[in-house]
Amino acid sequence: MVLKKQILAIQDVYVPVKRRQTLDPQKVEALAESMMEKGQEVPILVRPDGSRFVLVEGLHRLEACKALGETTVPAYLVQARRH
Image (cartoon, rainbow, N blue to C red; front, side, top):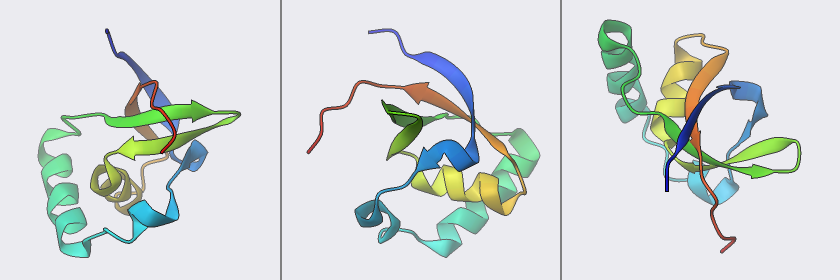
């Protein structure tokens, strides 16, 4: 399966509540510093859900982008089954 990289508006990415509970602010800060130097090296993973996208993988990368004031985020669209 070939993943298709897209640039998405951060506001269109929905983070499920369960995922939010795993957020580590120190990890976000470290990632944000790394992104300032090198840019985002690994896109987040999302699955389409109607008009929005649901985060599958990459919570800390997404939050680091927000912390840096970004409005878009590189993402791969995946077909994930609902749990």
